[in-house]
Structures are given as structure tokens and as C-alpha cells.
Image (cartoon, rainbow, N blue to C red; front, side, top):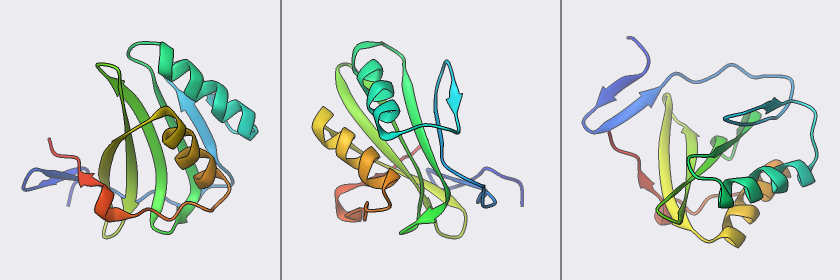
Length: 124
């Protein structure tokens, strides 16, 4: 099986191997040594810079979530989760800036337990 592969409208990615620590990246930089204030700075930039994105990846899945990522669409914030379950699948929801901050910071502190009924599969 080649990765990623398509199952219906859903794209499934290969599950990543465990890493040493968290990574934080946007389209300009990637950090492996950072603090929660850096996450807040990256997100603040996302909210005011068109076509920006932020991805926070865990060393291994936490409550099945391997990474959270966010981008904006016409002024709205889309948060996506990379859920590891027989590969990695993307799920999304639209949210406020405050909720976006909370999702990222809770994920960084291993306190984020997604309410999957609030999310929908990303379809391509």
C-alpha cells in the first residue's frame, strides 16, 4: 500500500514513528526547542497573516492525536487534528481564536482530549 492513499473522499496518511520531542512549525520556520509562549506567538501571527499555517506535532499520539494544525479561510480559523487509527486521518472544525489557543496549549500540555463529534473528516 502506498501512502497517502484515498479511501472514498478521505485521504489516509502513514503513521509517523515516535520522535524525541514536540515540533512547532509554520511556513517560515520549524522549532524543536520552544515554550508555550512560542506557540501563542505563532498562532497570533496566523490570525493576522494571510496564507499562514501552524502545526504542532507530538513525539507520539496523545489520545490518538498526533498533531494539531491551523490555518485561516476567509477570516475563519480551521483547526485540524491528525488522528492515528489505522494510519493517520485528518479531522477539522472551525473555531474562535480563544478556542484555537486552548486546543494548541492543551495539546502541548497533554491535556487535550478531542470531542470527536465536534469534528468532521477532511475530504479531498
